[in-house]
Amino acid sequence: NLKLEENGLLYTDGKDKAVTWMNSTANGRPVVPRTGYIVEFNALWYNALCFCASLAATAGEEDSQQKLLAQAEQTKQAFLDTFLNEYGYLYDYVDGNMMDWSVRPNMIFAVAFDYSPLSQDQKKQVLDICTRELLTPKGLRSLSPKSGGYNPVYVGPQTQRDYAYHQGTAWPWLGGFYMEASLKLYKRTRLSFIERQMVGYDRNSQAIQVQTKVRFKILAYIRIFVLLHFAGRESDSLKIGKGSSTRRIQHFSAMFADH
Image 1 (cartoon, helix red, strand yellow):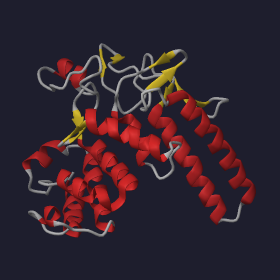
Image 2 (cartoon, helix red, strand yellow):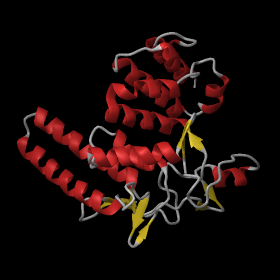
Image 3 (cartoon, one colour):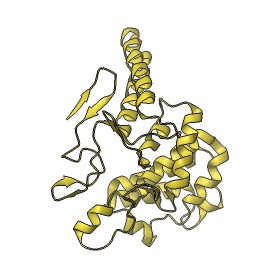
């Protein structure tokens, strides 16, 4: 259900079947029917093309490198033409004449990945709207409060919860990509801000135990502590509870194994 179009972008049909991580359904149909060109799919596709081109360069395979770079350039231009809107953020998906204006966290991947089709200014605009409308102390909201259909309360019977699961509920693992994007854009000047976001996250935290039932959430915490560790700073906020960022990495790794 995923195909490469002539313009260099990946296309998928998600009208009747949930095809992305936003996969909650109600009455057999996706609550968030994302279809066509999906923003994070194509950000990942561009990143993969550039990464493979770098591998080809390392291996001395010049022909393969040039083909991959040409494909990446085509994908980059199509990505900008398709997803970047006049307000400086990215459509969540585009299908024909249908552009989804909902402010969702999926655009953060285009900033966090090592290879991005966006310019520095465009990345900052995307990060800024994620900060203003999606950032919470426990991750990124799955939908902005300013967007239609916002439902932040995950309570009640399962059918009721399914409608909130990706319509406002905050997801900790997305916070990891937000923090990575911040570090890549602002380097050490953003370290104090990132560290404050991580206060209270240790293995014995009840909040963490509640929110990390899925392994990829735990991996997000491990990754951000690794990034902070290699950024070369361990401030007091990182030393609360369990000590240094190295110790934090060890504890979250143990938590991952426990799950």
